[in-house]
Image (cartoon, rainbow, N blue to C red; front, top):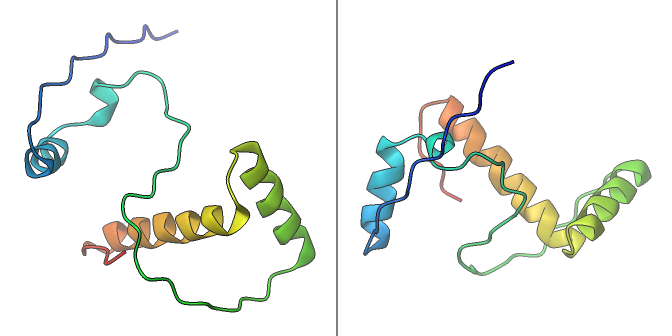
Length: 98
């Protein structure tokens, strides 16, 4: 069994730009030993109404997971889409626009 490493202490970062540069150059797993269970929406942008047909089981699962996290299911759905697009962009070596 592998021994868990001691978490490093985060430096004081005065601006968002400093924070972005810091995380571009450092591995978060060295600073956080426990996984975070949160969803953060950093800024509110204009929203457009869209209609997506999903099967009932997927809808029920989405609502159940959202309820477990105390979120409206549509907000969870937006965040999941945002995370998927960001991951896809990273995999393709480009910057996400979301």
